[in-house]
Length: 412
Image (cartoon, rainbow, N blue to C red; front, side, top):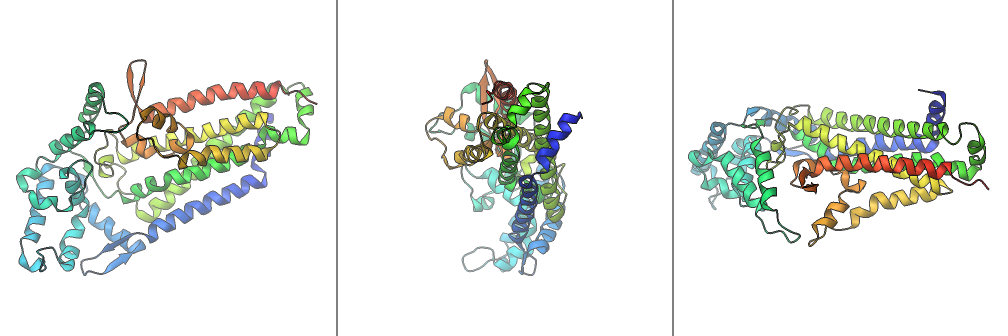
């Protein structure tokens, strides 16, 4: 790292705002972790309600027992167990429903696989809790076939903003056929919690980045040092480049460390099991052939590039605004504003454009596991891959604009 970059790096990281931002991110990670741990509960075999770490421990024990391939035989056995419990009069109340005691003793430990069955055999856009009563061992063995049928129903659903074309349906069916079967099953609650609040956490990270980078150029105007910088030998080239390097080192480094802290806190609380499980254990209809960990890498990858885009936009605004404060205000509106705009019920294009704003990019899990696509030059591209490409292209366009804005600034 050259001396100019080190100098610019120190200017960013030694500011009180940056140090305060670090504390905010750490506190946010602790708060989110505590909130999700405290909100976890389960019923043990004695009918006692457990909360927090005790509940997590029991859920981990129950779900990890099912770890391994989700074969049709395993699915059929789950249906047999359920039938055996529900056919025993001792387990039923006056309304012919499972008593709380029987549910706690026999059903809670099978909740993960039972929920997969209920979701798969329920009609599209619905969740029929009692659908298992209609199943038997033979019908349960059509689990994977029924999943594909449900995906077909999803793709053929009548959407107000436009329906999937024949080519798009074929594209997603082929994607689903590429998924290794049987799915790998395991306890995945820890990873599920990581995905659950990652969008909110990325928003906090990005706002800290905006506050940290807002003064990079604007403070030079505000303090009058722009006249000194632009009149020096390297003021119109190497110093600007050094500012870019330092800004992206801070952005990328800070984002990676923050995500690492957040992930380790949650997995440390909920458990590290499930990284090799199929992501369909979290979102059964997901069309991607990824494990939970591979999905996490994609979500983090999207979030990092979205944060870098936030950094690039902040630098661009900083290069033509005369004070850091309006840059921060503008970035706050840019990041938070789109979250209050509801999705269109009639325009798919509008929704796709809104999804390219950083505040919506941060919802990476939904993009990776969803059925969003973009058409480019006759090619169908999954939305999550296009999102990364869009961020890279936008950064590449914003940096030259920022460079020339500061370089051509007229000193008064």
